[in-house]
Each structure stands twice: as structure tokens, then as C-alpha cells.
Length: 430
Image (cartoon, rainbow, N blue to C red; front, side, top):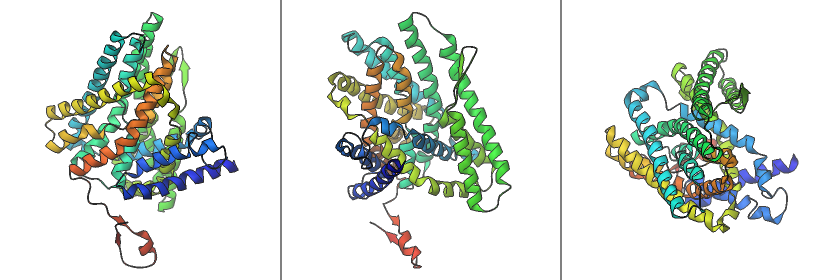
């Protein structure tokens, strides 16, 4: 336990220090945290073997997965804040259309590209793995996107639509993956299961939305018993922890697998709570401050668990490049087409596709599930390679896009150090 706490302290401090270096070259803090994780991981400092100074094995990083799950819960809870009725009335139709179409188009584009590779040389990748990777390509990482938005205080039509699309993308990606993975298993086993392809993903989505709705309503009722901000924040944190815990439960009834999507449950709880609680906006801001260290640890641990040994596998690099290029093409072209259909503004149409490129935890979870296929290791390694690339460059591309769209103002930082000394409000460009 002592070594674990020391490792976490090193991870948190290392991530924060790296963010100061990243600021010098105008990189988002998210990228800095990921790089810090790489340096503290088993392929750099961890290789020295000094426990407490970095993470010596990937298993050690995996043992801290609960921190990542909790962080994702808070991130999804915060994204739910964007689904206020006032925003949905303005751009709800656009968000749903873009969220669905860009994911479907991305899946189709990557499917076609990888199937072409299969027909050129069947030994490179199987049909089942090709269509599974196509579905995984639809997933977008909400965490990196939200962190960039918060760091630079991005605000505007593109930012609001982006956060809603990222949330919808999770539900769409879940359905696409379940259907594609069911078909992939049928191709390998010679039989198809309607339950796993159609029934189970629908049950998971409905169950997640129902659980999130009930949690949001209950949180609102219990909040009424407390008046101090500290107690209300504590109650909100307790509910996020509760819903994350319940979301991780999986069970089987009469051969049908039941489970919940962590992101959907927490997002729905945040949506319901923010629409029925008058003080929700202020409370959400305070919860964000409490969870800042957890978010830093989430990205540092994400960087530490990136397996750099895959870079030595030529097949993985080849398939990974095809996957990365055509996924980017699918996201950008799919977003552009769906924005045109819904008459989005020029800035949204031009830049939203680029902001949807980051990919991480959700995709890795899908890749682990796909591990039962004959080419399971190939799928996992291709996704790991894409996550390595997308997570390192994705936040920067998101920042550039939001800046060009005029929704990120010139970088300035509020100096709390000066205010704490009792001085006036000072703006600091460090």
C-alpha cells in the first residue's frame, strides 16, 4: 500500500510538472499527462525496477484501474450537464444526426478498407476481425475532449455540439460493436445469435438510461436535505461512485447477458440532475474542482498502460496505419456530410470531425471483448497502436480546431497565488 501511494504521488506530480513543460510549446495538458505516464510506465522509468519510481509492470498499472473507472464516471457526469433542455431545443436534432451518422460512416469506411486488405492478402487479417475493428473505430474518447474544453474554457456552438455528439457516440458505438462482434463470432462459429447481436445491446442501453434516470432523480431528492456546499458535493461524489460501482456489475439470466454502460449511466444521471435541480450548475463547477486530481491520474495511468512493445510488430504497424488513416477519413467525412444535412454553421461543419478523433478507454474495452476471436491479439494491438497515436495528437488537434473556430480565447491563466495573498485579481500568462 505504501508503494502504491508513492507511485500515485509520483504520477500526479509528474503529470503536473510535465504540463508546465507542455505549456511552453502550446500543447494541451492532456497530452502532457499522457507523456508523463509513458515516461513513468514500464518501458521507461519503470524498467529501472525501483518500486515507487514509476510503474514497473503493465499489471501494476492495471491494478489501479478503479481510478480510471471513477474518473470516467465523473467525466460522463459532467458531460451530462451539456444536455440541458435549453441546448437540446436549439441543437438536439443536429447532435443526434451527427452523432449517429458519423459513427456509422466511420464503421463502413474502416470496414471497407480492412476488407480490401483481407482480399489482397487473407493472411494479414480475417473478415471477422476486419468488421470488428470497423465497429471499434466508431468510438470516440470523451475524456480527452472534455479536458481540452475545460482547460481552455472553450465555449460556443461547436463546443456545445461536440460534447453532445461525443456522448451520443458512446451509445451508437455500443450498438455497432455488439452487432459487428456478433456477426464476427457467427462467421467463425458458423451460427449467429440474435440475442447477442440485437437483444443484449438494446437491453444494455435501456437499462443504463433507466438506471441513470433513477439515480439523477434520487440525487436531486436527497440534495434537498443538505444546505452546505461541502455536504452537497460529498453527496454528488457518493452518487457517482455508487453508479460507477453498479455499472460494473454483470449478470446472466436465462442465457441473456445483462450489464450497464458506465458512461451512459453517469451521463444520464448528470443530464437528469442538471435539468431538475436549480442549483446544479454551481454544484457541477464545485465537483469539477474536487475531481481535478482524479482526472490527472486517469490520463497519467492511461499513458503508463500504453504497450510500446507493439511498435516492433510490422503487421500491427501496417494494419494500424490503415485503421488510423481511414478512421480519420470516416470521422471527418461523416461529420461533414451529416452537418451539411442538418444545416450546421460553416465552422461546425469544417472542424467537428477533427475534434472527434481522440480514442481511448471505450475502444480498448471493446478490443478486450473481441479477444475471443481468432485474431483477438491482432485487434487488441491495432487498437493499442491507434490509441497511442490518437491520444498523443488528438487533444492538440482538438485545441487547434476549437481555436480556429474562435471558441478558445488567447491563453491566460488566473493566478490563485496572488489572490490568496489578498491582492486583487491578477491575470498571469505563465
